[in-house]
Amino acid sequence: MDTKDWQALKVLRETGNITKASELLFISQPALSKRIRNLEEEFGVKLLLRSARGVEFTSEGEHVAAYAVEMLNRLQEAKDTVQNMGVLRTKGMIRIGAPNRFAHRVLPGLIRVFSARNPEIRVHIRSAYTFEILKWLRNEELHVAFVRGMVKQPNLEGFLINRENVCLISGSAISLEDLPRTPRVVYSTDPPLHDSLEVWWQKMFACHMKTGMEVTDSQTCIQMVRQGLGYAIVPQYCLDGGSSGLFVEALRDHEGKPMQRETYMVYDRKYLDLTAVRKFVSFIRAECPPPKGL
Image (cartoon, rainbow, N blue to C red):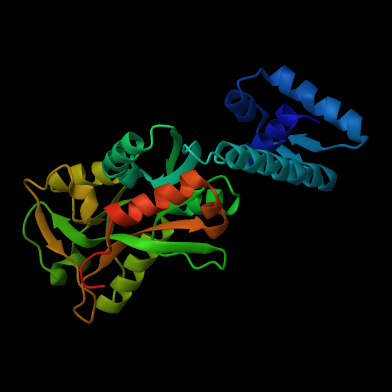
């Protein structure tokens, strides 16, 4: 086995599909299938089962795939360590994960300043919903991550860097009493925000929410609200494009406390041994002091 074999098994494990895996690996399907057959001959067992739905690993295949992922992680860790061993000059790479909106509106400015101060540190950024970022963090594919809500795991450290209101928006003035009778435009978001809004609704109202429309992203949701198709509940950062033509009100819970969305930076403390990571964590602490009131 070599690194290409490890990568092929890793991607197949993630996608469960030969076609998708070959596209991500930039090789043809026949070439990928041949690589798997060669591995099966090497180990003397069947690694994959093919069906109309895709591929599934056998128990032996799952064991080999887990080994492949572990070896890729160890190889990346070795590269990171070697690249960060410079004493006189800071070298290396830092792998960062961030929620989509944070990656679009906040991270570019931070990275611009950090890179200007540390030009020899390479930065790799991946963006997704928080739940996917946490999966990457657990799989040791990231050094640090920006996430919505604090994560409690024994090996992780973190600190609050931002807090923003969750807002009710509508095309015209609307009261909380009107919400049960008014259609809500719902957009796909990560589970923590979805769950917190479900709890908020249950404590505020004795009826089910009236869903009028479902869309895939916050900006489409906001435009639907502008057209008078219902109200929506969005974090304040979703309104960075402007709230012209919208009624906007910060939500409060049943005790009158503001509903807020918090962003944390988290990292596995072992990565502080890497110079690049240590410098980036210190930089974020200095550039993003805790919000007032803490």
